[in-house]
Length: 171
Image 1: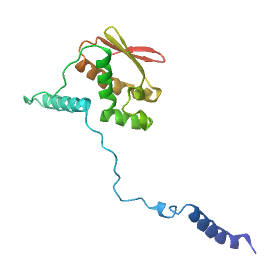
Image 2 (image 1 turned 180 degrees about the horizontal axis):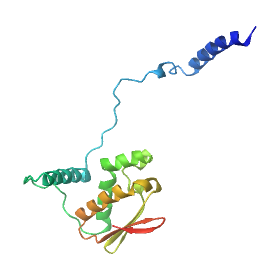
Image 3 (image 1 turned 120 degrees about the vertical axis):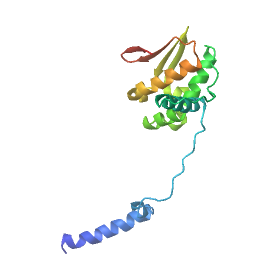
Image 4 (image 1 turned 45 degrees about the horizontal axis):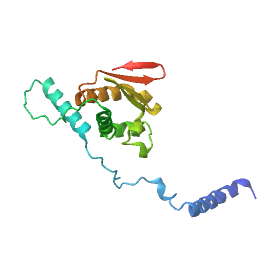
């Protein structure tokens, strides 16, 4: 018997054997058209503030004057508890969820300050943060939003320092 005559039979035998071990292998060729459901994240203070800020800036750029009541949260005093509260609001936002997904951060770390930051220190009137290495490429937009939100919520913050391998950046 020639080898080429055995090849189709061997392939057929192999296909049947693998389908016995993996019954979903045959059906895996087509993509499911069923809508996938993902858990929705509740909007928090950061998300509300960011949407209001975006809408206000859009209206200002279009030179329209609209007097809407501000739903921005009250400013807080500068202490450890208020910094922890503001950072918790930030890391539980939809924006932080997107960043965690892009950075492949473990799902259990989402919503935790330790999931995004290696360390956070309050030194007099400045906050010193060190991001986890997974966020190393996305620091500019992340720190821009974080500093704007920190300064809005805690106006007494004078400086925000970011530690990284090369040194310290001041925002």
